[in-house]
Image (spheres, rainbow, N blue to C red):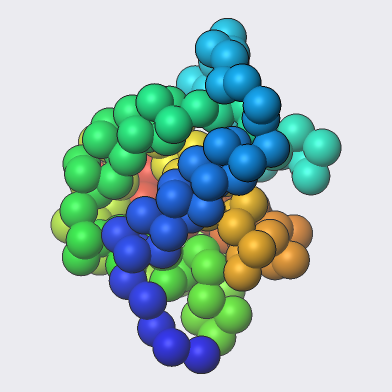
Length: 150
C-alpha cells in the first residue's frame, strides 16, 4: 500500500465528503450540528459524524482549526499510529511512539479537533472498515500524550 501523508489523506477525505454532499443533497441546508462534543472512546458506528451532517463550510473550518495547527510532520506521525495496520498497538507502557513535540502539538490542538479529524478520516472508504481499531487507537494516542505532558 502506498504511504500517503496526513494532509493528503485529510484533503482527499474532505473532497470526497464534499462531493458526496453535492451529489446526495438536492439542496445544501445549514445543519445545527455541534461537532465539538465528540469523544472517540464513546463513539459507536451509529454515533459517527456522517458526511451529510457536515457541510463544506464545516469541513473547511475543521481543516483550518485542526490540521493547520497540527502540521504535516505531526499529522503524519499521529496518523500512522492511528490508521496504519502495521503500526504497533499503542499501550500505556510504550510512550515513545509519539514524539514529545507532536504530543504537545496534539494537546494544544485539543481533544475535540483530534476526535473530529479521526472521525472524518475514518468515514472514508479506505479507512471505514477499520473503525473498530482506529477509534480505540485514537483514544490511546491522546491518553499517551496526556500522560507524557504530566
